[in-house]
Structures are given as C-alpha cells and as structure tokens.
Length: 86
Image 1 (cartoon, rainbow, N blue to C red):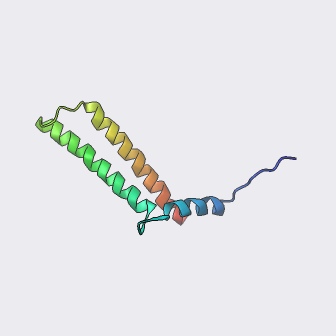
Image 2 (image 1 turned 180 degrees about the vertical axis):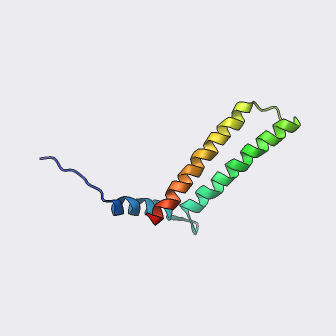
Image 3 (image 1 turned 90 degrees about the horizontal axis):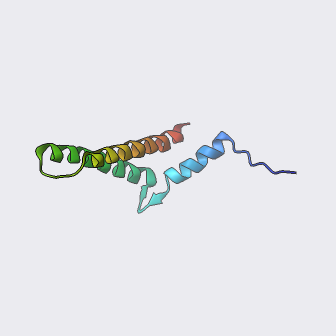
C-alpha cells in the first residue's frame, strides 16, 4: 500500500506564507527580496547609463544578465507576495 501526501491549497499557501513572512532581523523575507530586486533593477539601469556615457567598458551581456536576474527576482517577489491573498 502506497502512502500519498496530498496537500490542500491551504497547506501549500500556509507553507509559502511561513517562508515569505519569516523574520530576519525584524523584517520579513519578502522585504529583503524586494530590496535585492530593487538593487538589481537600479544596477541594470546604471550599467546601461555608464556604458552609454563611455565611463565603463563592460560588455552588453552583463546588462542583459542583470536584467534577466532582475525580472526573475521581481517575479519571485510578486508570487510570494500574492500568495498571502490566495
């Protein structure tokens, strides 16, 4: 006889809520994730701006890499924040 673990929607979202709102130094994980996401969006814009002005010699690939990372982190931040309302 096999034992299957069946999660209901409430158990899955409860687990995500515990992860999302776990406190680290008084702030929830979602707050830190938002700060890191904002940092990478600003870093991506800074790379583009400095390359355009010729102040740094960084390949364009780095701009794209940071842009992809920013989008992935932003989507993760969105998913974790929206699960508390589902």
